[in-house]
Length: 112
Image (cartoon, rainbow, N blue to C red):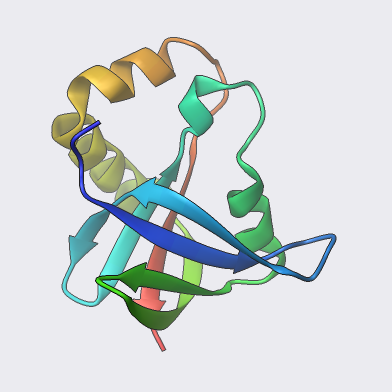
């Protein structure tokens, strides 16, 4: 798709095993932002459910694993970051948004 990706590693909610998912992300300082679009499918992506169950996660960039704690975004920060994603990947965001009525979960991961 031509966008920079990172690997998000979560702990499986049911399995307890580490799970890796490549994601488009935004970054502000030490915070990474992820949007649970799941290509516009009707279900939330598994990685987002994993973060709700256990917010400890890791991002891998350039071969370096960075530990962090995820927080689900709500309110004004959700709106601000959603707008940034929509501006960053406008065609992709519109396509995914048009496929589902569900509200996409969004998370910030802060280094720990």
